[in-house]
Length: 78
Image 1 (cartoon, rainbow, N blue to C red):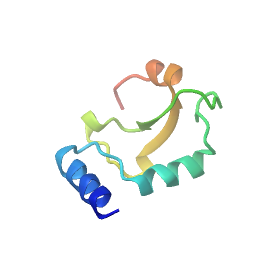
Image 2: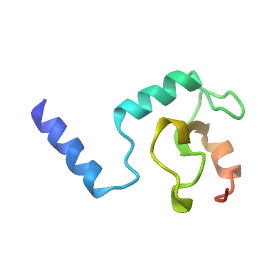
Image 3: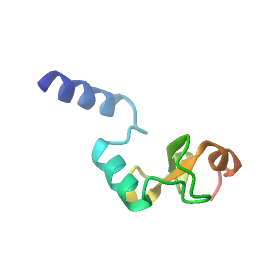
Image 4: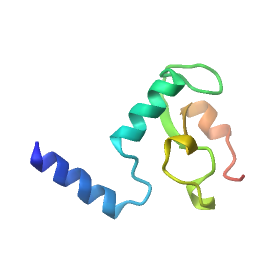
């Protein structure tokens, strides 16, 4: 268990886009395990509302569940 925590901490410091498990759980619960655009339960991923490349944060308020299809439609702009 300690090794797992250490590995997660190391990953978090190396990758600024890393989403902590607590944020993922909060977003999953809030979005009901469905794509916020089409309601699909298939091929879901965590997506920034304000893109990371445009200064978006890794907080639950800026993360949403999108299916692969809806994510591909989303432009990388604000």
